Amino acid sequence: MPVRKKSKFEQWFSFSRHQRRFGADKIYAQFNGVDLDALKNQIIDGKEVRYTHGSAKDLNEHIEQLKLEFVGQPEVNHFHASLIVLIRREVDVEENYQKFKTLWLSETEYLLKSLNIRWLISACDTFIDLEDDPLLQAILMNAVVLINTVKLQETERFLCNQSLLVNQEHQRLLQQQRYALFDGTSAFAVGTDDTLRNMRWRLDQICAAHNLGQIVIEIFDRLQREENNNVYMRFKQRHTREKNRWW
Image 1 (tube, rainbow, N blue to C red):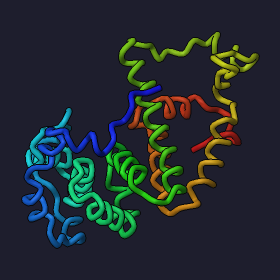
Image 2 (image 1 turned 135 degrees about the horizontal axis):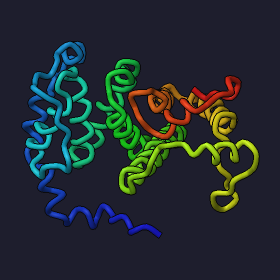
Image 3 (image 1 turned 180 degrees about the horizontal axis):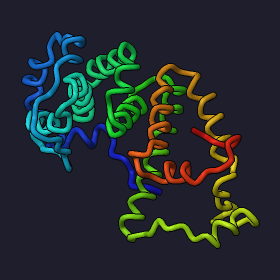
Image 4 (image 1 turned 30 degrees about the vertical axis):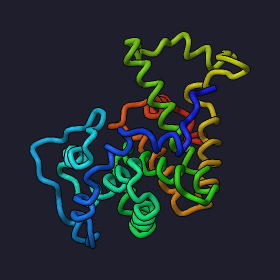
């Protein structure tokens, strides 16, 4: 079993949790009465994109540091991230969640195209944590499991310095016989397997049950792009049977 999550009562006695909310009034002053159209047209200036690693305890400092992730992007992306930070630090959670949800429902298509996968997944996590609709929670959990699984696989490849050179003999064997992996699961028949195509059909059907299911489809589609080097993209390049394609 995983480590037990602390109750809200236990969390209340954590000074660091309270400390991470200090300075919220200043953030509210910045975002009071925001004009979304203006935020969509304002581009964040800066010399280079710089991603945060960890987060500053000071709320205002963390919000400012996050802005560097969005250099060259519209201000609305930073506003979206700031709402998530306020929610994670338990600042007026219900009010900020409603702002977050309203933003997504009114600007779904814009956010899908504007945000990177990091923030699309953060959005999914936020809906899963706070949304009352179990259908939407279940749909978006698909994206979280998908990306975290790919993240583990790609991290292991980096960690173990794994080669991507294809063993031609192994590839032939995968077309000729079943190769067992673990607990009854067999390997993917590279180039011809219909497993991912069938999964895509089911994913499309499930995600169509809610408008925000588009987030999952957008993330899955991005995994197939050549610029996003990952196991899905590489298997797409190795696929040969047209009727079984999943992208």
